[in-house]
Length: 279
Length: 332
Image (tube, rainbow over all chains, first blue to last red; front, side, top):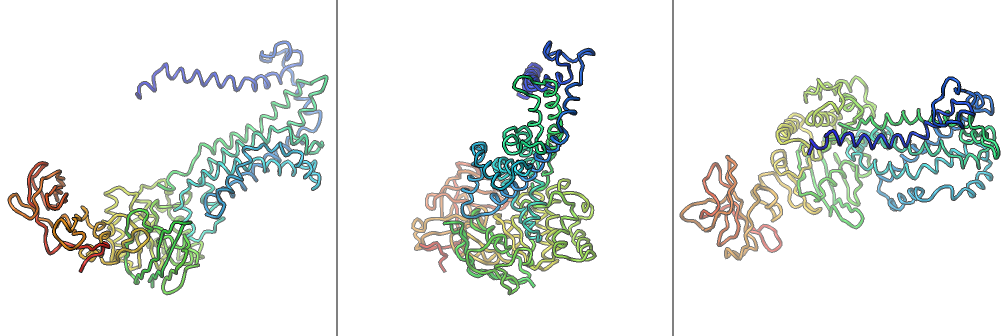
C-alpha cells in the first residue's frame, strides 16, 4: 500500500494534474504581465509571445505614472485594505471569542445571525448603504469604504474563527484566570497566538475581494482623492478607445502589493506555535 | 491556614442538575480526593471551588471566608490541570512567574520562590525552555511548580495524571504524595482512578450523579462501604453482588469482595465451573459460574493453576460479607 502510494507513475500523474492546474490558473496573469511590457502593435499582433528587443516598450508604465495620481490610488487601496483587514480580524476574533467562550442566552442564535452575511451578498443593500453614507456625510471618504468592507468581511471571520477558538484548550484559559489575567489579556495573549493560522486564512479570504472590488469605490468614493487602484485603472478603458498598454501596466502593478500581503500571511499559515501548549 | 467548607452547593446547566446539594468540610492540611465515574460532577465541583464556574446556589468558604463571588485569582488557590495548560509562548520560568507578577509580587521574592520550587521539583535545567521542548512528565512538573510558587492556601488538582503513561503516573503520584508530606498544605484532588484515590487520600469523597455517596478514609470505604455504589466502586476487581434470595438471606443483596473468597478442589459452599482465569503473576483472577450464586469473580494471591472447564468449590469469608437492603444502603 505504501509502496503503491509512492510509485513513479502515480507521482508523475499527480504532478501532471497539479501542473496543468497551475498553468490554467497562472495563464491569464502571465499574459497580462507579459503584454504590459510590449508596444501596442505587438500586443495585438501576437499577444502570446514574449517581448523581444524591438517589441519591448514601457509606454504602458510611463502612461500610468504620468496620467492620474496612481501613487495616490495605491495608497488609497492599501489604506482601505489594511484598515478593513485590521478591523475584520479584531472584531471578528472578539465576537468569535465571545461566542465560543461564554455561555449566554441566545448564543447559538447570535452565532447564526452573525454568519448570515455569508449567504446574503452585501451588494443587495447598496442603495441603503449609499443613502446612509450620504446622510452621514461620508461619501467620497475612505472611511465609507472601510466601514462597508469591515461589515462585508465580518461574517466569514466570525464563522471561521469561532470554530477554531472552540478548539483552544479550556484549561489554558482557566490557568490564565487563576493567574489573575484579565479576559482581554487571555484573549490577546493566550488565545490569539494559538489561532494565528486561522487568522491568516481569514485575512487572505478577506483581503483579496476588498483589493479587487470595483463596485463600492465606484459608488461610494469615486472622487479623485479617494479612488482605488481598480477604479483608477478604469480611466484607460474608454467607450471607443482603450489604452491597453496602460490598463495592462496598471493591473500588473496592482498585483504586487496584494502578492506581498499574501506572502506575509501564508508564512503565518505555515508557522504554528500550538504544539506543546497542551498535550 | 487552608480549610475549605462547602455548603449546599448546587449547580445546573440549563435543565440538567449536575450537583444536587453538596456539603463538605475539609480541614487544614488534609489531602482530599474526589472520586467517581465520569459525569458524576466531581470536576464541576472542583471548578466551583476554584471560581471558574459559578454555583447555582450554595456557598464556598476558604479559611472561613466566603469566596462565592471572588474571582479565581483572589481565592488563594492554585490549580494543576489534566492538559498541563502551560502558556506555550512563555519559558518555564515565565510560566511560573506570571501569576506572581500579576499579583504585584516583588521581583526578588519571585526569584526566590521560583528557585525554591524548581529545586523541589528538579526543574532547574529546564527554566529557560518552552513547554514545546519538554516531555509530558516534565510539563506536568512545571504545572505543579507553577502552582507551588503561588504558595496557595489550597491546591486543586484536576486529574493531573490522566495524560501520563503508566510508569510516569506512578512516579508523579509518588511526587505529589511527597509534596503533600513536605508542604502540609490542603490539597483537593479529582480523579476517576480509584488507585490514585486510595494511595493519595487522607479522606476520599465518593461522588455519584451529583451526590456525595460516602466520605471517609480509604480503608473505611474499603471495609465499611455505606452503600452498593461505594462497595462496587472501591476495590478491583469489583465486589461480587449476589441476589440475597438465592442464598436464603433476608438482605436484598449480598456482597463479597473477590479477595475474600477461598477456593478448594474438593469441598466448599458454592460449587462451580471455571469460565476464565487471568494469570497476572502476583494474583490470579478466576471467573467461576456457580450453581448457587451465579457468576463470581475470585482473586487468589500468587499463582494458581486452573483453566476453563475445571470444577472448583468457593467459600466466602463470612466475617467479610456485606449485606445491603432494598434501598442499596448497607445493613448494620
